[in-house]
Length: 94
Image (tube, rainbow, N blue to C red):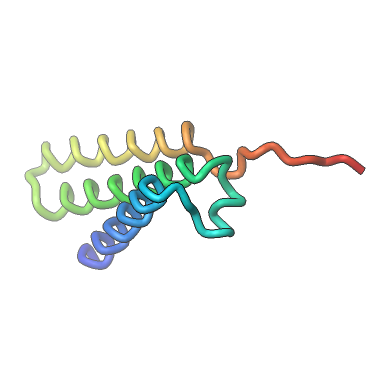
């Protein structure tokens, strides 16, 4: 399970980094975020959080694992608050 979770985190981080570098996001993702930069930041932070959590839980001592978990939660909080999907303003004219 931890290998699969680490792989998911790695894929998310690489996907987010690719969006940040190229400035392009796939259609569905681009419609969910205001800019490709926000989409890339969101995915990169989530991917890094998953990686940090998995490494912390599987490879570190109890205290270091707790610190890694808190860091992962902080990264997720930053991603959700700062790069929140669905925050694009929509035109509701009739």
